[in-house]
Length: 267
Image 1 (cartoon, rainbow, N blue to C red):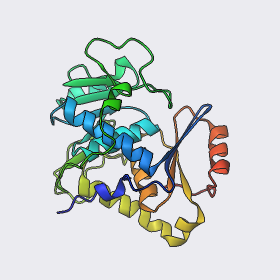
Image 2: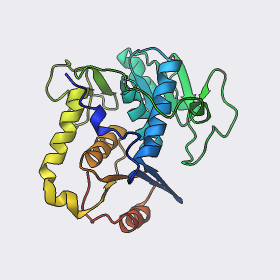
Image 3: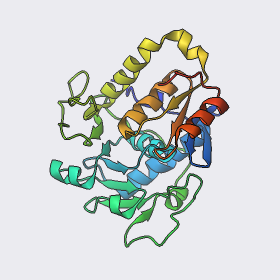
């Protein structure tokens, strides 16, 4: 079966409009589909070069344009994204092939490789001295090509494991909707299941709602939910405007005004 996740991601040809805008405190970063696809390609190259497939790429990043890029780059490489704290990953008995974080404390020590990503949106390198054997999740990406041939991946391959809920438990890949604990969070999703959830989340909006706003506000403290909302926006041809966790209501109001978002329209 054709990989249903790849068509949702930007490619080198998508240069005509912004795909992702990220607002933080005193920060606004805009990425066209073309620029974002270059980041995805570099991350996919980094992932495949620095690690071999394991239990997933541990993306220990909050909602941010970098977390979107690392998740999508991981999917481009045919790998799975793993969300959760070190304690949750250890309790689940998982060993990620790569751990990526904003802080050294959030890195998973037993991962095959580790990379620190600068939290400043425009930073091109880690601002401090790197711990031993830890890679720079910005500067070290620059060595990789701007294009990456997607890894052929089966639709029933796991692409997202979310351990951020105590009730999270693995699901059989054939389950149509993936497992969801009582809190409604994602647990384990295949590529087909994630694509189906994105399609289902978009269905109630209707075509009229799509044309009402060229952008959609994505404001969620949950990285898994944020990723799904970004994919929903992209599926409908709209710009995903992501707010970082520290961005307050004033930043949200500014984003709504500046990006032409119709209030009440969310992914």
